[in-house]
Length: 416
Image (cartoon, rainbow, N blue to C red):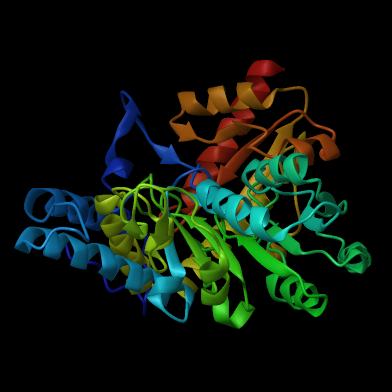
């Protein structure tokens, strides 16, 4: 078993990179991988990979229902992961942690349970213009079904939310304010605590899309007084297919179940059922057991390094990346200055489509994302069909920035 590295006192990116097997591969002969797409999905350290493999080899069984040794062991691993995640985000108790498949399912769960139960025709939901489709489409579906009204906090030219307009929107007495803590396009880190405090003053419930924030810097739901927080395992060194919904106990207890089936019930007759207690009320059927255990290992890994150390490293690499990118003639980087954003850089290159830029970079082993990044309304507001996005995480280095810049110059040369 590979032990986690104790790097809290001294962040050593070269040592950290040794934990990620994929970073040693060539994508083409003699062309090493430069992975700059962690905003979409992060790579996995060997500690997480080995934890999942070991679980499948030695401890796998279905959970909660078996009374034999291996089933009880599997259940213990699964519930231990829940405890680790609760501690990681500062939840009051593990039972406030609901396992889902991803951020998208977590938000849909709230929309289809809390939203259906507590929202009425004419009620207002406040969102923002920078939302990922995962925090937009579920509310559009609910609006079409129940006649609720969606209102949006504008994004200004610098990539910030217009909080003065937000205060005016609060005059509509919204029932819910849902927003991304960090934009997956602009990298903007939104003032979550202020947004939540203002929402609570008018009696609104709040939901944070933490898909981009939780993997990169410390997030504490009690400090924020967040009502709901949604995030995904695959963006924070964990496996895909596992996500988290945090909710305050009183909210979760008041919500009906999301799906019916096994394990979410206390008793079933031919004509009725009674629900299990939280969190099991929302975890119908056999869950992603090994994936939850793997997410627990990812939390251990990130905790051992230290979230403060991770964000400090990203700030150093990200500051350098922004400095280099804006020097390139014809490149426009969208979003605020670096002291107000994470290490996410969406850009356009004059007269070259984002997909072409991405394809040229791929020839040099540089993996970036091109498109609208599941934020079509934001791109429409920016007046562009697509951007190229480079994003950085704990395993990226400054010399990878230099190679990115060199690749962009190659793209300029080819298309000139």
